[in-house]
Length: 175
Length: 114
Image (cartoon, rainbow over all chains, first blue to last red; front, side, top):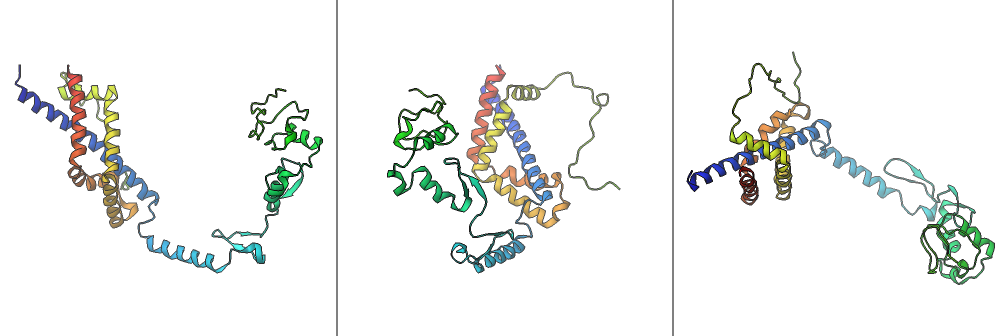
C-alpha cells in the first residue's frame, strides 16, 4: 500500500503528462491554422496593409466625389464595384396583392395604397368583393379590411394573419 | 531534390520493426481510457475555449504572423510554426486555466483508476 504522498505525486505527474499532451495537440492545431492562413494569403495584414490602406482611401475618395442624391438630380452613381444604378429601379413585377404590373421603384408606395397600410388608404372602403376574393384565393398576406370575413373564400392564405381574429394561418377556414 | 513540403510526416513504422510491447504502461492504459470515454476530447475543447478567452490563441497567432512575415508566406511549414509557438505557448498558460484543467484530469483519473 503506497503512501498518500506517493500517490499524489504519481497523480500529479500523470495529470501533468496528459495536460501537456492535450496542450501540444492544441498547439499543433493553432500552428496548422496559421499555416493555412499564411499559405492561402487570407491574412490581409501581412505586407499588404499599406496597399490596402491606399486602395480603401481611393475608394473612399471616389464615393465622396459622386453624390448619392441620385433621385433628385438623376445622375448615375458608380459604386465600389464599378456598377451604375439608374436613379429609379425599373424592373417590373407583379404585385402579389392586386396583380398589377408595378415598377420596382414604385413598389413601396404602391403597396402602401394597395394593402391599406398608408395613412389615407386605410379608411377607404373602396374594396369590392371581387377584389377581396381575389386576395384571399392567392398566396399572400391578407389585408386588414373589414370585408375579409364575409367574402366567400374557401381558402385563406398562410401568410401573416391580419387584424381579424377569425383568420387562421394553417390554410383552413372555419365559418 | 524534393521540394519543401508543408507538413513533415515521418514514415509509418513497420510492425515488424517495432514489435508491440507486452505490458502497456499505466500511462498508456489511462490514455486509452481518456480517449475512449471521450473525456480527452472534452478536455481539449475546454482548454481550447479557455485559451481563446484569455487571449492566448491570439498571442500565438501573432507570433505566427510575425514569423510568416519574416520568412515569406510561401516558405513556412507547419513544423516550423509549431517550433515557434511551443516554448512561449507552454510558458504563457495562465495559472487558473492550468489549475482547472489539472483538476478535471485528476478527477477523471481517480474515477478511471478505480
